[in-house]
Each structure stands twice: as C-alpha cells, then as structure tokens.
Image (cartoon, rainbow, N blue to C red; front, side, top):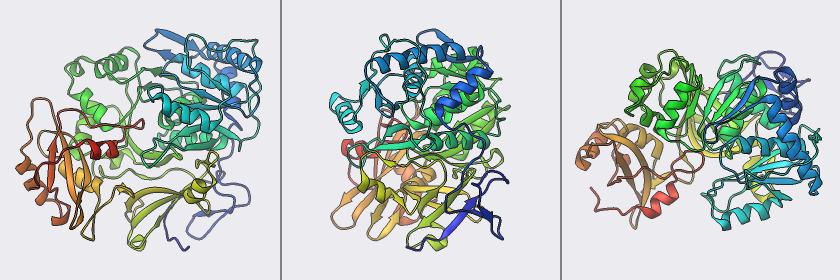
Length: 515
C-alpha cells in the first residue's frame, strides 16, 4: 500500500535512535522508528529518580479528601501497596485493575501496581457492572483495587518492570464502535508521550508545575499528559474528583495553579461563572485544551482571561496520547487547527484525496501503543506497517497544521457528497447564543443521510432555528447545511475523553421536520 507522506516532525540531533540518518530534507528515517534518548527506562525508574531528587516536594493534593502527599510519602505508600499485592499472589506482568475515582488513593494504587512489577489497568468507576466485568475478564486482572480506604498493605516492596517495551499500562477505549478494547502502552510509549508533552509546552526537564487535574485519571489524557509529566519533573498534581466549575475556579486560585487542562466547554463554563472575576488566576501560565472545536471568539476570550498564559491546543487519542500541538502564536489565526506533529512523530494521510491534503490520519512515533490486549485482529487493522490508523479524517495544510474533519465512522455521506461534522460545527459555533453544538448524520431513505445539528444554548439565550440555518448558508456549501436542528437544554453527552458521545446523541435525539 502506497501512503503519501504529507508532513513529518523531526527533533534536533540526539533524539532519533542510533543508526538513523537525516535525508536531504532533514527528515529522520529509521526502520526502528524514532526514539528519544536519555529517558528513564521504565515508569518505576522514573518515579524512583524523582523521589531521590525531590523527596519533600509536594506530589499530590487531593482536594476532596484534603490529603497532601510529598514524593517520599507517595513512594512509601505505594511500596506498601506493592508489598500487599505481592503477598496476595500478584506476580510480575500480572494486570491490576484500578476502578477508583480521581484522588490520592488512585495515584498510590497505580504506582503501587507499577512497583509490584504489575501492569495497572485504569478503569472508569462509573461503568456498569457488566462493563467492568468485561474489562476485568478481558484483561485477566489478577487483582482489583476498588476500595480507596482498603488498599493492599504489606511490607514495602520495590520490584518494578525492567523492560522498556513491556506493558506500562492498559487503557480501555470508550467502546463507541463496539466492545472496549485494551490499548497496551509500553513504558517507552508512555514516557515518550510525557516527553513530547513537555517539549510541546516548552518546559524544562525538571521544571516543576502545579497542574489542576479535573479530567479522569483513568483516561490516557490525564494519566499521560498531566500526571506523568508532573511525576517526571517533581511537580504537583492538584486533583479534583470531577469537574465542578466553582470548585475548579477556587482550586486554581487557592492552589496557585500554573497549568490548566480541559475541553473548551470547561473553559466556557469557567469564564461565564459568577466567581471568575473574583478568582485570582494570575499564576496560570499554560492553558491546554482539545477534544472539541474552539471558535475564534472562544480563543480570544481565553487570551483575554489569561493574559499571562500561553495557550496550548493539541490532539491525541488512547492509542497515541500525544500527536500534535499548536504554537501559542497560531492559536487565534488558526483556531480551527490542532497543531503540527510533536517531537519524533511522523504523520501521513491515506485515502483517495491524500495527495490534495485530506484523508485518514496515520501516525508513527515512539508514543504508539503496542497493540490491543489479546486482540491480534484489531491490532493488525489499527497498526498498518508500523503506522497507527487513527480513524480520524483530517486536512493538513502546507505548513503541516492538522485540521480535524471527522471520525471516519462519523462522516456524513449525503447523496455522494461528504460532509465533515467538525467543519460544520466550527462554522455554526459562532452563532449568537450557542454554548455547544454537535453535528451527526440523520438517516434518509433517498440520500443515505442528511445533516443534523444538536444545539445547546447558553444560559438565558434562545436559539432561532431559522436564524442558525441562515447563518450556515453564508458559511457552508449547500450540502453541508443542517436540514435538521434540535435544540437541547442539557449539556451534550461526553465520553471519558471529554469528546461528544455521538452514538448516544444519535439514538437519543428526536428530530423535527427538516428545514
């Protein structure tokens, strides 16, 4: 299969694996793939180095429980969990499921599993019993740590994994296209993703941050892009059990947070909350976001609200936590982009329009998953000759900026014309009074699908359906204009990654007559 290379990103000398060499364009190519040098070999080794360097630095702040742990305390508690797991029969390489909510016990449990030489399997604690049972059965979990008040306790033990290519953690997908699959991320992959995040944010190797974590830690975003970078640098994660805008603002102020991370809807709620004007956010220097379109007026509002901060949009997925990042200087002029390839990462496009810059995004780099746990067929389909097929349809411009168009499974084929939902959402999000918008295909016996939009108004606002359709006509080709518009009073349903759960939205929306 001949897949055109559209854009690549290459690091300075010293990053690629030994034996690789740059071609005349400066692109580094190697059969072994791109590799970072100088990283800790495993997650356990990373934690050990940080504890040795900054034992008394604050590692974890659990807002709900009022608990604060230094790195020494975190290590001591985790090593006792490791001892308790070993005493119960957990061996090196065994899987340990952790269906716990955000909090200090989660960090202790996951690090404890690592120190026992086991493979942590973070699990969404809000899943149904049947969904949890599937993950436990599929992963073959040897232990389940589901009680934050009764974690295993034994004699301190440290026997972390030694092989960088062995599984570092298994993250189960949201299952929107079938039963959840366990994405296996090696120690090298997770450490590489954390390093890519650090470089994208222009942080020093041991530059500590105070990051506010309200996203679920069982998802690779918070795990790999917030907790691990903090763990590597000796920084602090201030953990909220869940996002509640008032508490989030208070924490940002009281804890002198300097790194924020969330989806655009979180920031919109914060900026429009009555307490925002009184909150002291002067310490914030990085505002990270992704997972949804961010119209220019929202970006401008973020720039105004956090004048001392750099904005840092990006894109990743469970199978490759960190893929692209957008430079702060581009955030307003290119607000519809998710950035260029991060360090040591190559991007390609596949599909009939690849030569013109549009197609399915393929990714290669050290952050990729090894495969899906015990699912050779799905692994072979997703990992095509060393390239991860993301399933995301994108457009890449001449400067290498990536613009999301749709999930391949969500693309709307209207009578042979392809309408990309993200493109329509971005165009309509600037209509007055729109808080959230999602576009899906509505089945049609003649055309296959028509374009449908679900709109959530801002508090106190009303949406004129005819007005938003007319607004779309001035910005979109005729076949992309929504023919169905449903106004929804409740927030859009979202999965653990903060992305709109479109299967649930499709099945739960009643469409009125077309416009």
